Image (cartoon, rainbow, N blue to C red; front, side, top):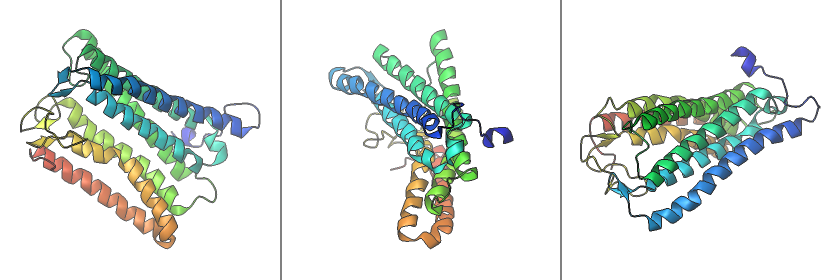
Amino acid sequence: MTMLFNDSTVLSPSPDLASAEQRTRRVLIVGIGLSVALAVPSLIALGLDDRLINGISVWSKPLKFQASLAIMLATLLILLPLIEERTRAGLGVFLASLVAAITANGEVFYITLQAARGRASHFNDSTPFEAMAYSVMGAGAALLVLSSLVIGIYILRRPRRGASSGIRLGAGWGLVLGSIATLMTAFPLASGEIGGPGHWVGGVRTDLGGVPLFGWSRTGGDLRVPHFFATHIMQALPILGLGLDQFAPRFAKPGIALGAVLSIAVVIATFVQAVQGRPFL
């Protein structure tokens, strides 16, 4: 692990660090492009296909994941310049970015395929293929989150010289804490140990009539709520850091620390609320 984060091996034997870095950026750009490309037919199908799963269109879940994972890859792409130049062009950052792009699009592809088949992608082990695919998708999701964690550690340990404290700390800790919180909320969600298979805890086991845009249950607890807030710590803390750099640079460090504490508190509070079977709204 120490060797990974002390990585100084560039992807090309030439001293052109910019070309090596560009290779890493292209991996993420292609990953974003694939997710967006899949969203186009999914959006068209949403208006044409009347099949339902859990009371809502079969295409609702693919669209949510296509958007969410494109945003996640875009976050990594935007934050890469905060890493010191030689490290940014190194093998460790490239591999983390490659794993993120592959696992994100593997997950999106399977969810989209299942929607086309009119089958559930999550909590579905009805056939040997679907049981295997769900397990593989879970492992891939964990690798995706761990890739974000690696990028966050690089930002904290090997920052670009001259990077402002707010954005550097917000980006680094946002990716690290967001990744850890995402994994912690994903395990009870995926296992089905709380409330049985599915994301519901009590209430009516349907997504029909859920919170607009998000679909969260309005009749009982929903484990997707803390998972959502956990994942988006990855964007919230960098945005907070950017704002602190612009308007209150002297308070960047305590501001990020407070933001981190509040973010984790929101995740814990919404997790407890969901486990108790109470709707978020």
